[in-house]
Length: 142
Image (cartoon, rainbow, N blue to C red; front, top):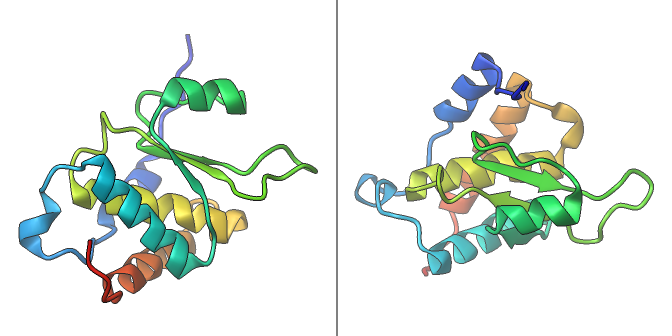
């Protein structure tokens, strides 16, 4: 059985994303209330709404796309020619355990919603970091 794995360069670029959270908050566990609030912040700064999904089996069933166990997150825009008005973003809570992990996953996937043609190029991750930095500049508290 062949299993898709992330490219080492992509994995390194993802890991290099820096959360704007204060150091004492980065390692805090992710709870659903915080994750939904943070997702709303990413949707706001990107001006690209999305539905947050954590039930990976339901996501795979609805989208018809496999969700590999090593994926932290994935977005679904809908089929070519029939794009969803509001895309889906699935987050794998088994891998996204800390708030910093969540920021990285949200920034990475939001970047794909904003500029899907960038793929995993260096420019794409610069955009993901910009999104994360803009979230860090918001003054709204949880």
